[in-house]
Length: 206
Image (cartoon, rainbow, N blue to C red; front, side, top):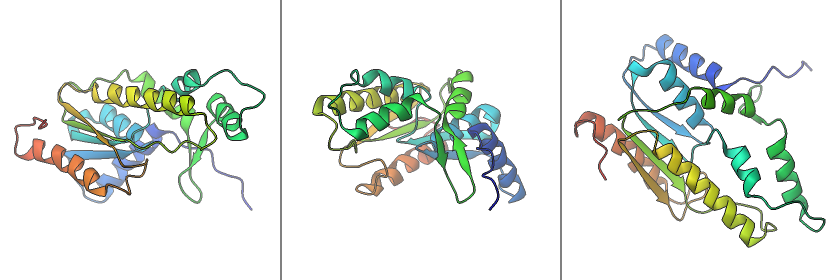
């Protein structure tokens, strides 16, 4: 068996995506949709190719400060806390590599640093942020810890919506991270951006 390839970063993926679009004959302008860590990719792509992006939809998107903010939301370690909580605290503090394919992985920490470094503001670019309203923390996490983590996530999603002066932030109250409970809200979020670009003078309807 060969060794695992070096994990990619979102900047590398964004550049690869641009090459693939060109090779496929797809031409700008683009409306980008970024789900989870794909939100990083959408933001890096927009920073690299600002003239080619006319709108973005972020679906429960990762935030560049999420590990630090989640860690700050956790209580000090105690001897009686569950193993899942111990493991999660360790994950937030250590290197974080995410498998995204059979032979491809993502360096989450390096990718977060790349997004942080661009100091992005999207001006009035049409932007819709859709946030999952039902958290999926392990049952052994104390209720107050889950509440703190949920609040931290909501604040980070609000941060993402504030990247543009022309944005809407919607919470899918019944959905977990994958939006399987309310897929129609994903469709609506994307269509709002497309509609703004095509028919509403670029203004996101509220």
